[in-house]
Image (cartoon, rainbow, N blue to C red; front, side):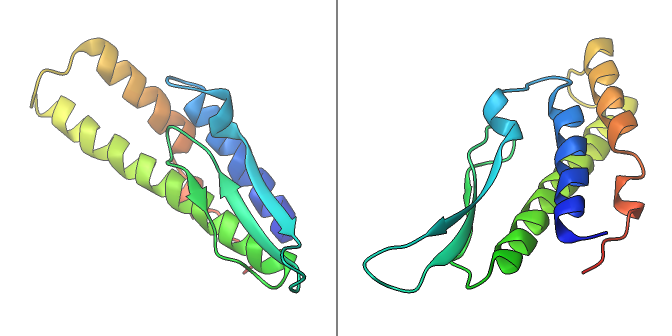
Length: 125
């Protein structure tokens, strides 16, 4: 699987997850931009403007592949953080901590159903 296929896999998974609850269209757009500025050598930079996963501006990269790898890693980390949050809140719900209700449990379980096993996927680089 090449880097673009990896990003596609992660963005599809991310879209399925954020679409469950607090989906905003901007959460599903990820960018790699090539910039020419001030007569300097062009650079590539990834961007994401989201609510669920915060806004992100990557480093200035010399190659498209470097920027794509940084974007892939950003999306992967965002999914990982959401998955860990779901696990923690399900523990709190199951242990009757805080004021969680059945609707909260169902929403969290739906997220876990989408994300369970996602991190078993192995990327090429």
